[in-house]
Length: 260
Image (cartoon, rainbow, N blue to C red; front, side, top):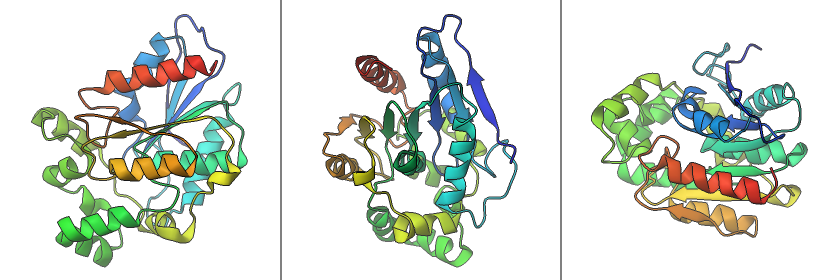
């Protein structure tokens, strides 16, 4: 399958391990190229972001996709890199990173506002309580686009209240639909298994995240025997929030300490 990738090659490559960035629901490789790819390439990393099948510039459909389908996309791109990459996954991409690590070696991985290994029931119930009309649309249409179908909805799920309107609208126009079948995997049909994962992990979350709350991030970290770090005054899309650089610098420092 032809999958879109965005790669940035550093002028002076000082790190042998490439970085592979995995996006979350509704997104594509574009979300990493806003800030993160240029930042890490400037720091000497060979960086690549992929768009999962049916997303952004990749071929294929979205409807009916399973976590296993998206996982095969991540593995397909990882195999094209010269050495096993360190993975950085956001939201659903963080969950895919966990599934990837169950059966693939990686020198390190970062979970950024990641879907928990134990499933998305807390998010499901939060949407039911706070946005019942949205949930009704999701269940009757059997697709996840209603969660982000309007700029207001996307802001609730993804962006800080103080993100400039022009910026939020730009990102909203880029959002895709998302697979309901995959969502069933995240509710329980194909959960992650922390005991199978031995890769060093950094687990980060955002204080004002309506999609994956700080408590969910802490619970994920607990499942791996780790402590999560929560960034203040940030929403779900940490890689494009005003404080994105503080997140990138934390990841950079951790990778350097791990010798990656």
